[in-house]
Length: 101
Image 1 (cartoon, one colour):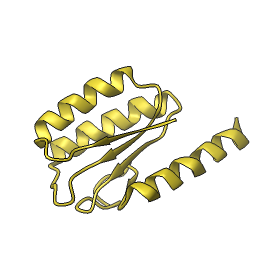
Image 2 (cartoon, rainbow, N blue to C red; image 1 turned 135 degrees about the horizontal axis):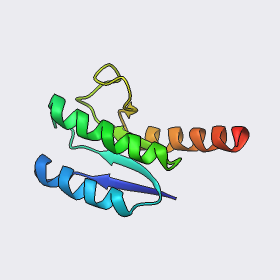
Image 3 (cartoon, rainbow, N blue to C red; image 1 turned 90 degrees about the vertical axis):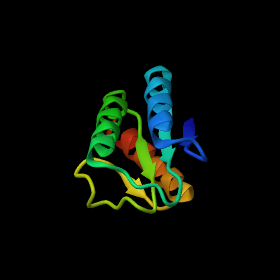
Image 4 (tube, rainbow, N blue to C red; image 1 turned 120 degrees about the horizontal axis):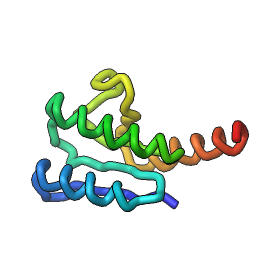
């Protein structure tokens, strides 16, 4: 199963706080979808990297959907431009886990 967390109209600070809380209870793959024009600071990228590391430690996928953030913004974050691509990537990662596990 995959859980999609979408920012919508929520402030970035509130969204990040809610996301951190939800991920602590989550045992599913996660797609984090930011509003189209949402900019992220280095601190917020660092928070996402910590969340991703926690999810990867549980053998779960963590994919960020953002039009403002690209793959060069972080060495560890998996960033794609659409939710559809995020689902495709998670399917691919699940196949890899099945083959390697």
